[in-house]
Image 1 (cartoon, rainbow over the protein chains, first blue to last red):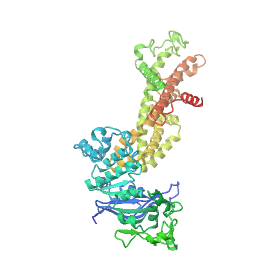
Image 2 (image 1 turned 60 degrees about the vertical axis):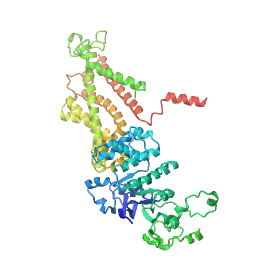
Image 3 (image 1 turned 120 degrees about the vertical axis):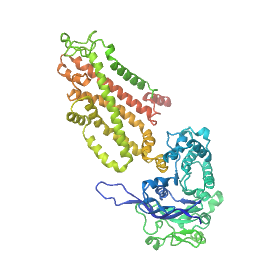
Image 4 (image 1 turned 120 degrees about the horizontal axis):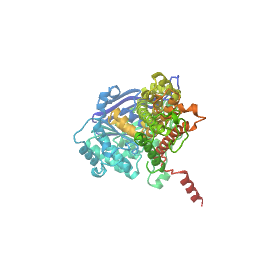
Length: 333
Length: 284
């Protein structure tokens, strides 16, 4: 495997619950609760999970918008959370982010050319900025002559997301964090934007951390997939083996929620449907956080936390005491 | 902004008042400071349109000239407290750590009625136009700071602000290029209202005798001089009073109009009349 660009070690990000005057806060929303991950150079790590499982907080923490409560975020071996402001400013060039909502991620009163030129301005790069911006626009599939002087509201969602991507890659970052970059787009446009991401990765040698809640999107783009639930990583594996032999019950539930295109098959197949709601991240369940909804939970799951352990299959790790064997799964449901 | 009739009317009338008072010395029939004891407290007539005061000076001329001071104080206070309040609001909305301290100070200032605060400051500093402007700016800035801060808080979590931070844009540029242009509407509207309030406050201070030097005609000073004659020469107080009411009324209309014109959410509702018309059409 290639070198690690980003390594996260036991990261916790907790937010205090509403402060009451004169009372010390004792409750915290544990948005990210002990995550260890690594992203390898030139590869794509897909992160999936329900809304509210801490995906976006993880992304925001990596780019420095949130402060980690504990744990380390190492970028090329250097701890981000311990950097001073000056070093952080330099580092920002290397880690950029594409946002979820293309409608709120662009300044409504700035022209497209200015928006894409903003990173150059921030780093006081002055030589031939307009021509660089035009190059970037061409790279992401916008027409530089026609679109340069327009305002964001004149564009469709897909085009706006292209503007956001051009801004993110302007400084040639090493790592691009994509926080559900296609979930706000039409399905037809999603495919185009995902293809754009893939082309850019090839051309510029980018490394992606790609967050999504749509497994089929991740399937297409990711080399490795991590499944998050309530601030923890449940399972991580190479994307090929992920879809064939998912071991964690939660992953299996997610996979079986994907509808099949054939209506006859869809009708006759057995689904692993989860019951109940996502537990509150303020009071996560004891032991395995998933035990409240897990159809296979036993007593030990309520008491101790299963570690994320390497499985027998290469590049596969699962945090479960009773990982699902596929023939068993068929029998249970 | 210029589509609504009342906006155009209020702006043009305010401009006319300004021009009239600035060019007053060229066209006024009587000098505002010419004392003529023979013509004391005359009723309004063809020669003295608004009557004369207790020194026989022309009240019309004095009312027109007084507008200069009132408008000057109003506009300077409006601009200064908008600038000061916006700066405080931006900083405390953006830097959450500084926010607590700044807002407690602002809360303390807001606890006093703004007129009382200005009164105390003028009493301490002494009455002159500059001191009145300083005092009123202090009195009106907290309100502006509060409004700007809440607007900043609303916009702070929008993704393009995050995006700017991630691309390494400096705080100053984020504050003035990304945040300020998107919250300018409430600032302009509130600024217009402060203009109106400052005119009223200046008149009140002068009326109470702690304002502008009594020898300079201002609407407040005129009212103060007139109060003992109110039973025998009501026109002496009525005309300067009407001038205040009229100007403040125009400014408030302008503020309301600006709010409607600049707020994109309010644009769709045209007027009660047109809504009622639509309702009637829908019914029939």
